[in-house]
Image (tube, rainbow, N blue to C red; front, top):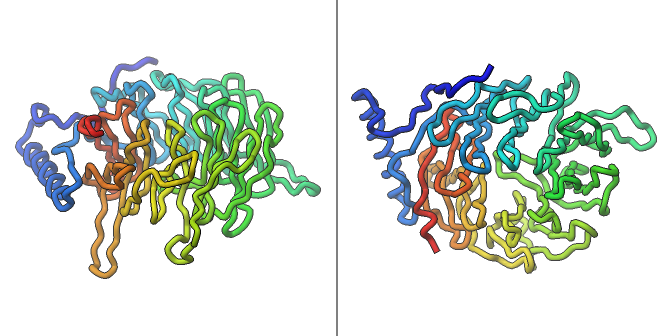
Length: 414
């Protein structure tokens, strides 16, 4: 049954004209004061006086649709789709058999892919109806999982029949999203941590842990089920966790290059041949200061790589040289603007000597390394830029709410 917009509580835009009670006015003023006071401690940081909207949900993931008309909020095993202008629900909540870990809009915004350890499916963003097969398991986890950019294929983790000769018990299976037909099985010897499609919707990147401080990267052709380049072994130390800012690598937007994080640097490879092209390996590695490179990922335009380190955060993808200054804050749950200029994320800085802690959400200029806007948040769980980058959505795990802020002032920066 098709339903009209359903209000979420409390999903009313925080506009003074909509505040009906004296307590509401007081709360709004208090919020504005707290945000302004928080930002004033740092001269370079500027905050909007009040959020545009405050909605319940979004403690796991927050996404704007590609055209900016919809807002996807995920909390626990529930996904909600809101009208991004009115913040009213477009459909009733979609529930999964377990906590949703993957949530993505299709390129045209018509579909949403959600996946948990127990269930993965594609569904219509405006009706909530499933598209194609619903994948379920009561055995091992379906994660990691991914959807191709055009939503024609999906990849989920499976346990394969025992193979005593090959010692391969794990795999990624690639399915046609519409028909549910199995397209390919990509076998692995050990547990998987990451999977992603290239922009051609055919090649698939998988990452598995092959040692205590070792990850192996594989690139596959999902038509043939064969690897296209030799496996790449790196000293990357962490399991994939976007909420913690741990991203081991990925394809460039055009699919021609692959960036791989190592222990204290990254290397860019030709994704077609596997040939190493450039790296940013330091001349001398301080065993204390440079331990643990957290991530490496291309910016959307593919010209630079975001990889935070003490001597820089943004790097030229052709030379491996710094393109911006280092960000001093400890940043997590982040996303990068489409032009590669700004970083939005949560941060937490602990000063052991002063017994103090600073936490919240912010936007950083990746060239200067400075905060340009700061937002109040207790425990940032997920963030998102709107496609036009005039708004940001920030999910706070402590309150269980997502706040939407206007940031139009960023567009005027040179």
